[in-house]
Image (tube, rainbow, N blue to C red; front, top):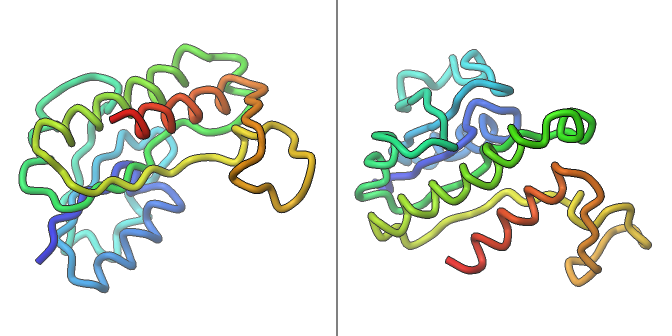
Length: 157
């Protein structure tokens, strides 16, 4: 049985991913601070998963849960444009420091596969739709910048 860890697993996208992973028989650990995700999104699978409430922006005992993990899906992030302009510090803490701490746990426990949930907002207002991944990166607000910094961290680890 594959041991899989999902950050942000109680969010909209994360809970749907967890549903698919449960159907595949994965042993699933979810890390979430419930700032945007909701525990009730997981009520129908709560007997089949382990849910840990924690703050990924702060190193902690949660990092030890990466031991013997096969796959990490890193979806946890603060999202939205206007709040990121109003409170860029919390977005940096969550999206950049949180990603750094997840990567450090992956490195410590030698996790082989990580999937990062990026954002098309990194491209700013695109010149063409659909936007190609080769388009110029033009983050225009703190949320987009923090997601791009997360991508850069992933690529450099």
